[in-house]
Amino acid sequence: MIVVRFLKRMAIGLAIGGILWGGAMTCNPSDLPRAGASAHSWAKEPKNIILLIGDGMGLAQISASLYSSDNRSVFESFPVIGFHKSFSASDLITDSAAGATAFACGIKTYNNAIGLSADTLPCYTILEEAEEHGLATGLVATSSITHATPAAFIAHQPFRTMYEDIAADFLQTEIDLFIGGGKKYFDRRQSDERDLIAELRSKGYTVNDYFYSDLSLYSKFDPSKNFVFFTSDDKPVLAMQGRNYLPLAAKLAPPFLRERSKKGFFLMMEGSQIDWQCHANNGYSLLPEMKDFEDAVANVLRFALEDRETLVIVTADHETGGLAINPGSKLNKLDLAFTTNGHTAALIPVFALGPGAEAFSGIYENTALYRKMREAFGWATIAAPPTTGMN
Ligand code: MG
Ligand code: ZN
Image 1 (cartoon, helix red, strand yellow):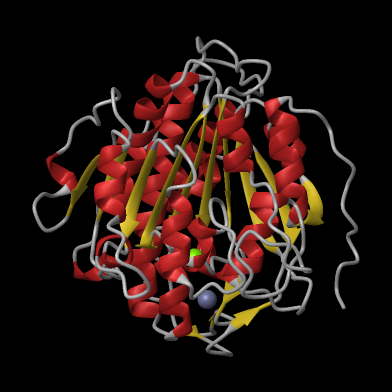
Image 2: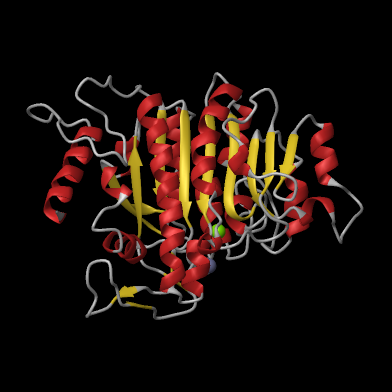
């Protein structure tokens, strides 16, 4: 069975990769879409970019998930694979703040920095620039939405823990959609009397939350208004405890954003808690986080294969835990071990599919993801920042 599935998977990868595949494509597994023999080709340039970040997701996390899922993985559907070097300006071991700032702004900065350069100047993020170009924008996370990874795309603060300041920075933009935890940083603030949810509503946003509703009740987000949904007051629960909104958001957010602007969209979605389970050295709760994230990736792929104008990039900011699959492991029964409670400096895989995907093969700095995304959008080329940013 494993061999058969593996061969089917190869066929999907080849079909999606646009490589001519002799004979009829007879394999059509139910869990993933495929390009198909009659599929029209990709657009020349992407209108939309969806960047998916599995926080802390290195090759071992991907391998552990694959070997715990009957030797199958959504990552096998990607035709282009590369690696990035994740180090920050302050440390060979990055944190998520500097890691996400590298993707968002194309610069290496110090650990803890949210959308700031190493000398604490605000940097223009790809999300802000997308907005300037008239594209719709969105952020989805399974942490609080003010947590480092989503924050670095929209906020500018010297320390990642400044959650209320980060929340206030959301109001400086016209972001079309955000979904995540952290409601209390918006409506019950310690540092001031502002009610940012009331402010969002007065700007015309639809704002709902877990207390009154459930994201699973939605089959569509109303594209006539900006859409915000808070999935918890602070941190959302674990996937193991029933948190499952990321795959649904991956299904509903792309068509919503496509309707929000004819020019296209930029969407970042994060599987935030892969990192947290690796910090906890808990392989048992890591696997459901990986599955949740991979289900979201699969839904994004379904959209991209239908849309044909969307570039999908999946990567991580860094590896967490120094995860290893130890001797004695068997298929679907792994012996997982960790070397640290912190992050590591291992090269991080990058998976790409869609128009412009080929630029993501090779080995490059994490900051190059930003430049490659801008170039894919056809925005003016900028000079490469220094790659020897370690000090
Ligand atoms: Mg994160
Ligand atoms: Zn971490």
